[in-house]
Length: 387
Image (cartoon, rainbow, N blue to C red; front, side, top):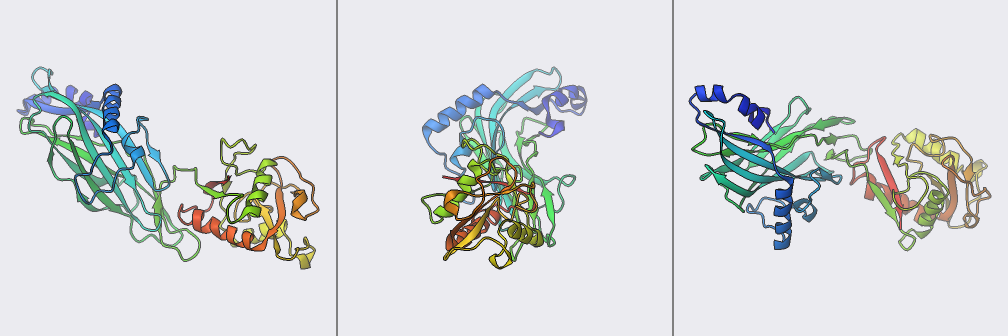
């Protein structure tokens, strides 16, 4: 919250405020978690809420009912619920003569193929008493110049709205990080605050959630791809292959490799090495990874059975590949038609002859279903889930 509106700061300045002729002032403090939890429990029982503004995106269900009191994020979505208490103080005595308990429900979303992002805020009043009649809430959007590189407020719609017990006020803002040079990455932070006003109060209170959530906007994906923005704190990006899907041989090879101890297994799946893979975008190093694991047959590499090609794991497009990763021997399995021992442990790499179409299309899937939509840049971590 804004430091000058913190109740501790306001109380220390009551004499000054009284000397300025301000008889009533408002301030904000952390709210009751128990009150907020009960409020959210009742909301959940009542069913999903309906946005009052047509331009608002629906709040995800996981956003509206979370009681973890911390940011919950995906690669392009983030949500947090924070309980607050607004107090109305007499400057002459310091006595509290009014109070509003409320929650902020903040929903942020970005676009992996665009540099605009949105923030929505719903302010829900849990309870209140005292000199609060006629209170309104409105929004205030801003970029943080000291913590952003090119952020600008593109649009804002959060007009003054009356708020009463059980009621809500809401609005949105859009921000932009334009003209990102090729190869560049930017760090952006923005806030959407609630401003509380009442004709009885001489002092307006502003409350915003500590903007520790960082947005990364970049123009650094390989190929002819547009710039976009994601939440880099989300490090659980994953590509999924299934033994019953379109690439069963590819999936089985990866599962064998992960079971043998090679990295990249999604956590809590029972596989031994949960260290993520990290993307490698250097074309030269990718070729070296590929040729180390699967040298061409005409250069002394493994013979290719008809209709099959050599698949390597970890992928050539990762730092853990056969050349750039930890040095170690090749490993393979009885069904792979490659005369290499099974091997165990985190060092080395795995090779297998699999259906050529599955190998090719499965590699394309890595790009179209993970690298592009999740904006996995060079050195970004990710996992491979087989199931």
